[in-house]
Length: 93
Image 1 (cartoon, rainbow, N blue to C red):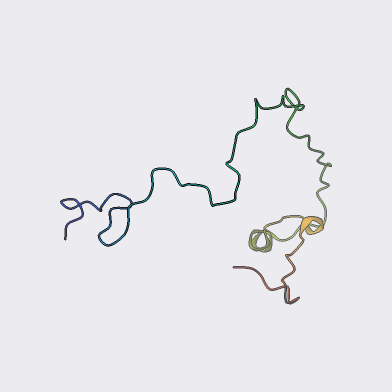
Image 2: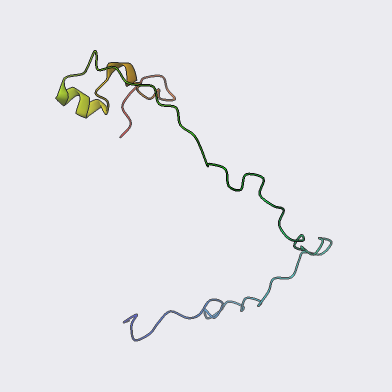
């Protein structure tokens, strides 16, 4: 069968399945959902999304380059391996 000559059937028209309703009806006993009025004004409008504090990094106690590439950090102070759930400290792959 060539899918380009015979495209898949439209949703709800697969042979042997009932067609889907145009709009699902709410379950009996459930309230009909309604949209609230206009959205409330955003109290953070115009303010910065976030502010960052980054302390100056001192170039000391560096890993050798090949080890730094493998660990993902040049600075020993910043290397914080992920603790695994089983407590082994294995590298995640």
